[in-house]
Amino acid sequence: MTQIIWYGNVHDFTGYAKAARQYVLSLHAMGVDVKVDAFDPHLPAVQLSDAQQQVIQHLTTKRKSPGRKVYIFHQIPEIWRRKLHPSVGFTYWETSKIPDSWVQQANRMHAVFLPSRHNIEVFRSSGVRVPLHYIRPCLFQPESAPSAAHAPKYLQQLPPFRFLSVFSWVERKGYDILLQAFWETFSAADNVALIIKTVGNPEILQQIESMKQKLRVKEPQAPVYVDFDIRSEAEMEALYANCQALVLPSRGEGAGYPLLEAARRGLPVITTGWGGHTDFLTQDNSYLIPYQLGPVKPQSYYGGYQSDQLWAEPSITDLQHLMRTVYEHYPLAQAKGLAAKQYILQHFTPEQAVLDIVNAVQTV
Image (tube, rainbow, N blue to C red):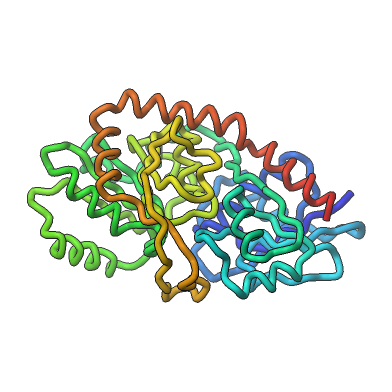
């Protein structure tokens, strides 16, 4: 039996760690021999349930088997290494073309795993020639229903209709588009709030205030609450359960795990109609924002964003219309949310993701 050696971060709040936990917990639950070789980016750990924490601990401390092994490097290609055993890179990308350095690194591996059809097209058109395998994203089932005891206390001070947005504070996530659309669509009279779940420092609040002044936002405004805390899985479950819709006008997503999480819970989703998440979000089960492709701007936090790449620029006016539509016609929005939930429960299950991995590993 082949043992999978999963190299990557599994403990923190990043998208890579979130995805890794879903995959390795699912592999273990289905009886696949998987060992975790944990990569530590020195970030705060997310609190898991005792049962999940025990499984993760077991997978990181178990020994390597003597037989056939396949290494899966679940990180950016700069971290990938080709070993004597079959070695696979597993990553995510968000623009129309991967970084030039990634092409060379990908072609050194035995194969590359990717989380969306969009990514497969982008990697192939960028010049990657090794086998590319589609590994659908999945969410390991929560152990219990959301508990009111885990709901953040600030929810009690916010209006009853809450738009939620979950993202890292980078330009790609479209926070500028989101805030402008929200401010120009709603006022305090609408009894609606926007919750931004992110990580960072209080300088973000100063940045928001500066944007507000530049746009000359009219008072009194609908409240925007920024949640900086590292939330446990139970707290995130409760946060999703206490919001009415998720909105993310992202310029590009490799997979879009917050979108998957919201849709799997039946929450109406408003997001850009371009990127990896369109594997599971369609016009029939979500609200897709029209967009135009535009040149990517250099990003200070990572050098892989290049001037010859494109990403989406979502329409602010269309986003305003969609947010108002969800707010004013919520029963129809709930029906779309239910359709997305049913689609994900049929086509994006942990069992199907494990089969994707097992079938791909057998060919490497």
